[in-house]
Amino acid sequence: MTGITPSRRVRRTHFTDFVEAAGVKSYTVYNHMLLPSSFEGIEADYHHLKRHVQVWDVSCERQVQVKGSDAMRLIQMLTPRDISSLSTKKCMYIPVVDQNGGMLNDPVLIAAGSDTFWISIADSDFLLWVLAVAACNGLDVEVEEPDVSPLAVQGPKSGLLMERVFGARVNGLRFFECGRFEFHGDHMLVSRSGYSRQGGFEIYLENPKLAEPLWESLFKMGEDLQVRAGCPNLIERIEGGLLSYGNDMTRENSPLECGFEKFVSESLLDHCFGGRVLRKELDAGIKRKIRPVSIEGELPPCDRAWPLYAKGLRAGQVTSAARSPDHGTNVAIGMMSREFWDAGSALEVETQAGMRRAVVKASFWE
Ligand code: THG
Image 1 (cartoon, rainbow, N blue to C red):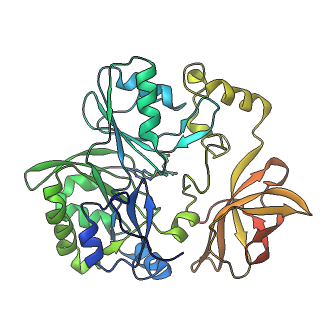
Image 2: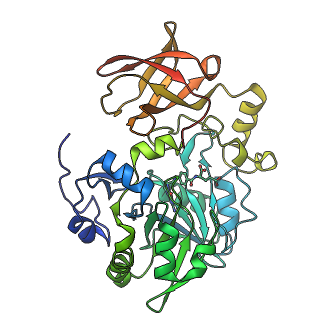
Image 3: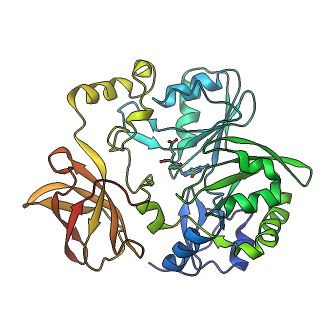
C-alpha cells in the first residue's frame, strides 16, 4: 500500500496544516478522517513518547453528541456499563453493544453540559446507530456530530506542559477526570485521558479559531521539554494492552471476550441492547478472551488476522503485533479460546511471511 489519495471524503482536521509542517510521514484513516501514524518513524516516536511529551492530532476521535431530556436514557440503552455516576467532572470508558451482544464501538463518554453528552468514538460509523435508536424509540434527543476536535498531550512530561498552558489546576485532574480550563478567553474541556500508558490529557477544541494558538502555545511552552508532534503509537499501545476497535475486536466479539467484564453491570442486562445475550454468555462461561502474546522472529505488518495454533489445533488469532525495542520481543494481542488462554501456552502463529513461535503471557507489558 502506498499514499492516501486526498479527497473531501478523507477529511482533513483543524490541525492538519500544523501536522504537515511538523513533518508527518504517514497517515491512516479513522472515522473518515486523517490520523497521523508516524513522524520520525514508529520506533523513534515510541522512545520519544516514553521519555518526553507529544502533541497528537486525534480529531478523528469524533464526538457523537446526544442532547436533550432523554439523552442519559438513550445512552444507557447503548451500553451495559452503569453510567449513573457520570458527571461534568468524570468521564467514562464504555463498551457499546448491538442487539446480538456484539461490540459496536468502545468510546469515552463525556458530559459536556447538563443535558449534552459526547460519545468520543473509535473507528466505526456509530452516529448512524445512535440516530436510528433515537428515531425508533421516539426519544426527546438531538443526535449529531459537532465540530469538536480532540488534541491529545501525552507522555511523562505532559503534566508539566499542560500546567504552563492551562494553569496549575489542570495538573490536579486524576485519571478520567475532566473540567473546563481557560485558554484565550475560552473555557476548553480538558480530560486526563488518552490512548497511551504514558499519562496525558485530551483537549476538546470547539472553536476552530483557537486551533493555531493552542498548537503554538503547546510547542512554545514545551520547547525545553522537547515537545514534538506525535500520534498513537502501535508498539506502545500493544505493550499497554490498549485495544483497537476494528483490529482487536469487531462486532464478532462481545465485551466479555474483550475483557470488559468490569463494565458489564448485571442489573442493566434486561434493559440495554444485547443484555440478554451477555447474560447467557456469562451463564455458559466466556469461550474466548483477549490475551497478551509474545512472538519470536521477524514479523511482517499485522494487516490481517493471523491464525494461532497449539499442537495443530486452532487456538485463536493475533490481531495486532509489533517489535518492542524495550522488551526485546514482538508484542502482540490475540483472541484465544478458553482451552489455550493460560499463560505459558506454546503456540504457532501463521503470518503472511510464514509460521512463527509464540507464547501466551500472564500480563501486558506496560
Ligand atoms: N480518548 C478519547 N476518545 C477516544 C479514545 C481516547 N476514542 C477512540 C478510542 N480512543 C477509544 N478507545 C479507547 C480505548 C482505551 C481507552 C480509551 C479509549 C482507555 N482505557 C483505559 C484502560 O484500558 O485502562 C481506562 C479504562 C477504565 O476506565 O478503566 O483509556 O483515547 N477521548
